[in-house]
Image (cartoon, rainbow, N blue to C red):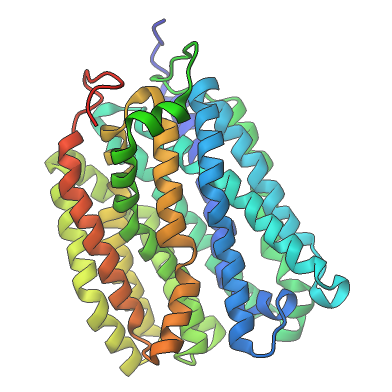
Length: 429
């Protein structure tokens, strides 16, 4: 059945509805990272402040355990029932996850139940977010085969909006309230704001158009087909995610590093995240457009290599000369190269190596598993490594390792280039 091309207004309504889910997802994740120290005091009291922080960051990482489960279930649901229906469901579930965190009483009020509710909220948010990326990336990439990079990169611009919004709200809370007020109740305000985005996003998705490439098929088992016929592509996708995932959550960890290791003030610690958030609003579509025009793999390789090679010396520079301005410069460079230059084109690359029939499931699983291994636990791992090696520049070396893996997978991905143009399921690895 042929689909009539959508009007410009309908097209941009679909794009807006799709990308708002990315704002909701990243806003929640980034807020948790930015308030990790505060949450550690309220929900994870321990013998030492360092161990308390590790528990808080570990709960942040727990969400990524649920992501592959959400990716498998919600991705399969979207491939069977429709990209739009999957996205509506994921946005509603994310709203509930954020809402639980906004209202849960502290450990001092309800004891052990408090951290358990926090963990449950992270698991639910992670389950929903696991399907969110695959559905959104597929929906955007399928809007225009000619400009897959530009459309799919808007998912990262949505992340930039979320980074900017979350860090600005966190900065505003620290400016407007005392530390005692923040600990008592003011930390909840940013999470309460996030609850408003969920219903709005779900409604816009309900009234938007379905993806033009989606076709409902009988006896369709996306998850089984992906696992049976595309396991090598799944592994490749996880490797492609590694550099961007590490870079993203390194950026979230930077305020914690700045406060606990570099001894910069609360407001100053958020400056680099705010600036990098603004950059990730505007730069991803520009780099993706360049990739659409000149070839995305070459452009991605150059930008990832630049970020990886410079990470180690940049962190040594920041440790030797800690200041708000230097923090901004380091974060801005790494975000521009690894996130905007490399990561922004990964969804378009996914759309080229995975078959349309099961594309949402395959993208969601690759992304969720890659985020689980290289993303969600990154802040906790980095916090541990910095303490263990007594080297505040360790994050730079860690990023270099994941960049090397992504570059290897980028080279290997050429084998599957153009798979959507005529290759049938079950033929090829």
